[in-house]
Amino acid sequence: MPRIVSKEDFPVGRIRQYLEPGPIVLVSSRHRGKNNIMTMGWHMVLEFSPSLVACLISSGNHSHRMIRDSRECVINLPTTKLTEQAIGIGNCSGASTDKFEQFKLTAQRAHVVKAPLIGECHACFECRIHDEALIERYDLFILEVVKAHVAPRPLHPKTLHYTGGGIFMTAGKVIDESARFEPLMLRT
Image (cartoon, rainbow, N blue to C red; front, top):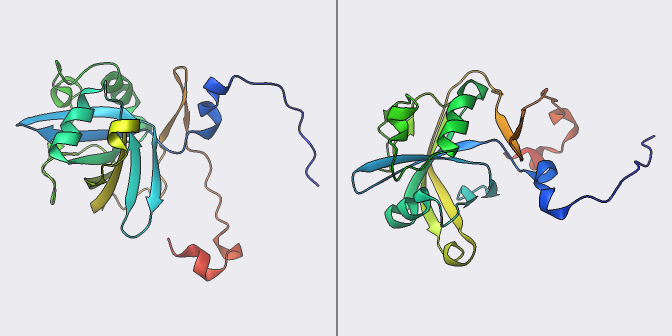
């Protein structure tokens, strides 16, 4: 039987270390002939069909304007092998740095959008802005994934998760409990 866990007060400004929703992603964009990449951890799936993802991209970030103006981007999923690049990309501005060149990443042509795929990433999701109602007020982009590219192996790659304060975790052991679910609950 589970037991009650003792708890202490905790600063509300640091709760992200427990609630961060998913892996670090590299968001690539293209506008006016220039490519850019940003490291992002604030995203979540909103809907299955159409496939909608919400991304928080600060208006102080160079990518914010590029994505808002071009109305598209690519969400690229790096594995832990790209930890150094993910940190480096997050610590410089695309306004003054060609991040593809600086971090030796391969810009590949996307199929639907003009923003490039990152060749070294495990998965790449081509996106277009679906709803811009929350961009101005909250810097929240509602994106629709219009094309997905995923490496067939490994099925569950080791991904990097940021918990704030310069601390990362990696994806842990896979626990398959699919046999315990009702079939309707496993639609995705």
